Image (cartoon, rainbow, N blue to C red; front, side, top):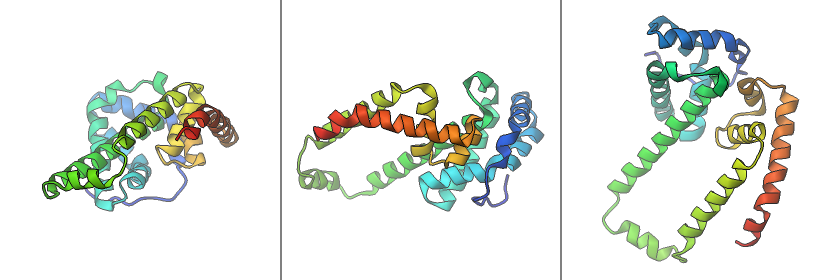
Length: 202
């Protein structure tokens, strides 16, 4: 895993090998280092692509990839087919690690700012209630997503929070491409209905 990682634009052909990836995870859970290497070779270009879409820096994305497979090594025993495909599990880990990286970066930058910079920004930001309103809006969106059928919610989350293409989502969830497009379209229509009152009140 020491070689330089590069993002790949190729279609995620590994999605057709769900049983093989599940088998690798089972072997990793038993401490098989060779299985971890095989999983890395099969999926790391795609995992790197997800990480890069979120962190937008090559080096940071490479660090995220290493974090992902370290977590896989430690937590492979936690994987269950009942929670989804191996690909969906890797998507969840990759997105979480990438978001953690972004938060750490933001925290570092905040600590490096001159004393009083945050106060200056707060004074220039206008409405002091805006952060509260934004937090309420995020909470409303989360509740709206939670009200969707599980298949629609997962598809939308992978598309808009995970940054996956429709083809990648179809592979990750093991569903036909047309089905994924329909789920996203229906889910977005429902979200617009639910979020309409909130948007009008802004």
